[in-house]
Image 1 (cartoon, rainbow, N blue to C red):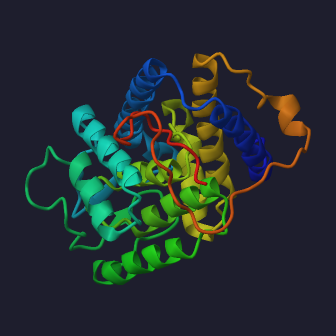
Image 2: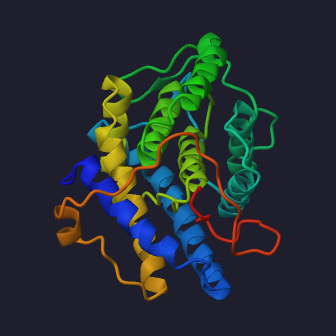
Length: 293
């Protein structure tokens, strides 16, 4: 990553402030942007998982788990991914606090094609991640590990929302609580947390997958979250620029702005997701709610 997290976060907050000032957004534009980002969201998620088999050659494999020599299924169904996105948006609209139940439901939705009753359960066997620097905790430790994850999250409000979402993403993947679908669930969890603070989803592109796995491996092995935070921040900034470009708004987040060093306020204290202003009933019509007040 060429940029430091603090510089990227300043650029993102400046772009978000520009977009927030234009609200409420035209409903037609909201609908179009929602569909565009949803397609990219699901498409790149599928692409990352499709390429998992090739990552052994570079020792960057966090999606290809083997249990007793069996390779797990990796292809995500686009329809089920869209259902999971809608579920995440519903959580944001209802201001629900993060819970293990939500995580299990996201997992159930992204793996809906399996239909074998296992999608809601934490894994019942120990696993190894080929090429990774860490070994997930034993299955007997999963309930305590997941409870600790939720406890950590509840105390993480001092972090910038993007840094917190990236760290949540990495911490979840280090636990790897499910037999399959951890990566897809983790990316939805990442975007769910971003949406709670009014940020668009971090669409991890197929071409960034190697950097993505490298950053995750570093975070899991050494608790250094700078790399994954930068990658997530760059993805969010791209999504913000999609909005700004579509609305004809001036993008003040380019290199010159990023180098200016102008201070941008960082949200602090407890977070309260605001009402969705672009729908008469308050339901989310795009993956970018109004900022918290």
